[in-house]
Figure 1 (cartoon, rainbow, N blue to C red):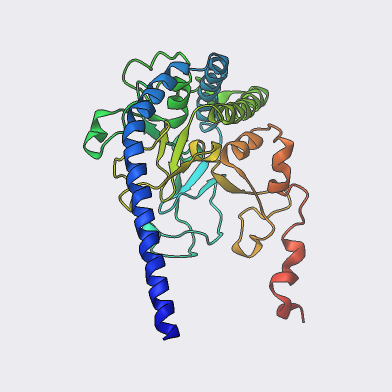
Figure 2: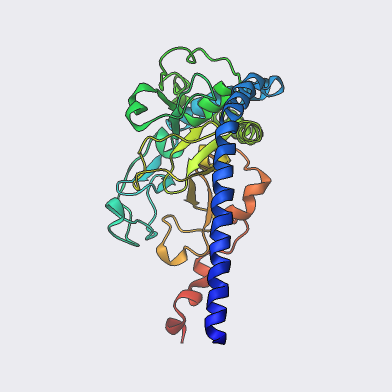
Length: 327
């Protein structure tokens, strides 16, 4: 009898709870219908606050710095060799590639294999990240069938355009070759002029990254959590470009718009060709930083720890890799 009484009380409680929840849900549904016009009007009014006047000089500086980086890297690539793996995104700044077994193979079918090197180019050093170009930041969400109606431009350029920067390509078709020209006769430039170009490229890179970080505090940008797709705007698009179909959007940061492209670097105390056995001793650096330092520029202090400038040489620590051979 006591058990039956408890069951009856619990069933009455669940019934009252479901009735209260259904009334609460229906009332909220009615409230959302009333709030929808107010929300839409608020979004339309919010568009009037953009672009923010105080951020227009920052956007213009970012756009100019990006142009300097493209020109500086294009010039240095005519003097310094860059190698890229044929089957993965690995890049190496040097005449010969390394022997470190970090290649994942074509479509990630292999693991820990030696890279197959070919001559690299600008897109190997500066990884391109593109986004849909919107004439207005608070435009309706792009549907999948509309994906070919919108032009694809570099994500940093789209961010600057939405921030109010003026550019000759803004109201015309985007020309990717407009910023990629290099200095004529770069192969015969003296070392001091190459040093000046490399130092200016490094300074422009730091200005660019700091400026993008400032713009992202004011202007929204999204990146897919499953792939590298970037969207500049308050909400993502519905174009199914991800390998999982629908994108899963999160807030983007500087590295999402400007991948640092970390590469292995050879120090003076390292062997001529980096070996897989010494991978624990070698340093790293962003590809642009490594390219500029090989041209004579001084890397910013914040990269010194990553580069392991004062690290020990590999040959002095062979006993750490082959302790049995020392016995």
